[in-house]
Amino acid sequence: MDDIHGKVALLSGASRGIGCAVAATLARVGADVAINYFSREEEALETLALVRETGQRGILVQADVSKSSETAKMIHRVERELGQVQILVNNAGIVIKKSLYEITEQDWDKVLAVNLKSAFLITQAVFQGMRELRWGRIINISSVAARTGGITAPPYLASKAGLWGLAHSYAVLLIKDGITVNTVIMN
Image (cartoon, rainbow, N blue to C red):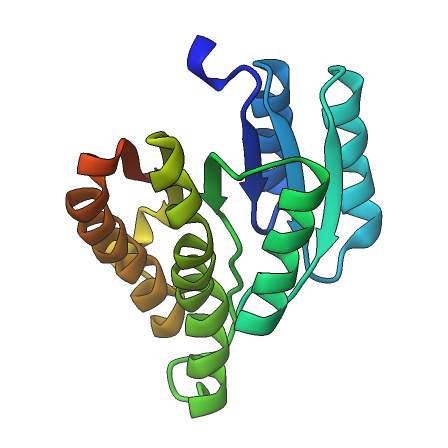
């Protein structure tokens, strides 16, 4: 973990749950942390408090990471206030709980935009800076359900499976630049 000390981390969807836990852990091992959230500001403030309790710098960045314009503004703010993003955790995710027979095209588009497109947009926005530094870590948070199926709605499963493919592609393409890309599978 010594190579994380002093690095800048950005976590999408970090206001609660897995994102909160990862933000607090990264701060405990010495990273400064940018906490992205969409609508849960109160919970994001609690995550920020956990980061700052460690003595590390932390900021909140509200953005809809499924939109390139908001993603660009988010990255610009993180770089201005904390520095170049060196660790990226793509954690933003939603699930729309509807039966197979109720899912609409709009539901499909929304889930894939938040869960998969956001990872593409944010990664594209930060990897060039990582390449210049010859160091970067990108982690996509997926779900075991992406491999096993289950009762969760198909758009969620498809988006989480897509994160695996995206990570494999980036991993092969970016390793030569000192950037590692991995997928973490959560239950």
